[in-house]
Image 1 (tube, rainbow over the protein chains, first blue to last red):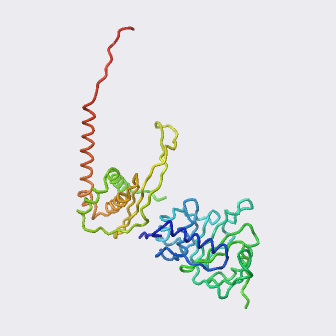
Image 2 (cartoon, rainbow over the protein chains, first blue to last red):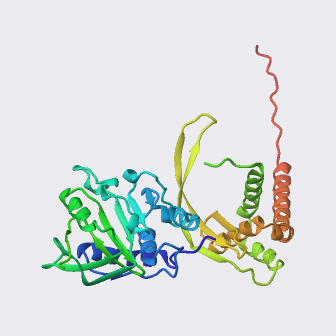
Length: 197
Length: 156
């Protein structure tokens, strides 16, 4: 059954947009999203709030098999965002991933072009846990010194994938990590280094 | 794209008929009609009722190119009733109550158990009023009819 989305779409999407801007400007910081009471499983609240804020009829979305198999999620996204579905990750403006252990390579998505780096795909990756206590080391624009970010579960070679993504700069994908109501961003400008053992 | 079955097409035609009637109805008369269906009809608003603009396109003649005539104010609503049917409505103007009620009628019409009472208590009285008014207008207009004719002047 189709479920409602934001109770107050204008204010809620502006608030989530502001949180996203902060998260993107300071990669790795964990911010809260609010305004959404519930989302169809397996979509998390933060990921759902991001879709309601950013997706529209001009942004084709690619769903990973875990989400694409749920008619409830697909119906909910189609109704509330109006975004068209695409099977081709290269054409997607947004990629939604609920099962990060099986996520495709970042290179499978659109990397943008040198003329239009903004045409790269933005990935929304759902994880179970986000924390700044330990994890991978982040540095780069928006980070004073360095910052640690733990997101799990992620593919074992995630650091290598991010390093390859950074090498493409100004091309490359941006990543939004969502866990429950919280989210953190890893824009393409961030340098990611492995955690010290 | 799935192909539409004849049943789908019949439902679609029926819903269009309901909307055609409701488009020209007042919020008050829909409320009065719905009151006969039961005290409190339960429903959820899938998205808040909102008002916006749509571009109205026009075309002169059957083979003319479409052009943008102008923008019209519309209010849209989407509601879901407990049995799962989802009703939609887009109505001209800014009457939020009417948009919500029209969407509710659309949902109720799709449910087989509420279709007949809806037709009986809500749609039939509204249709009757519209028909009476139309007939009255036609009669008034017909009374002012002038038949023109031209006398042959015999020049040719």
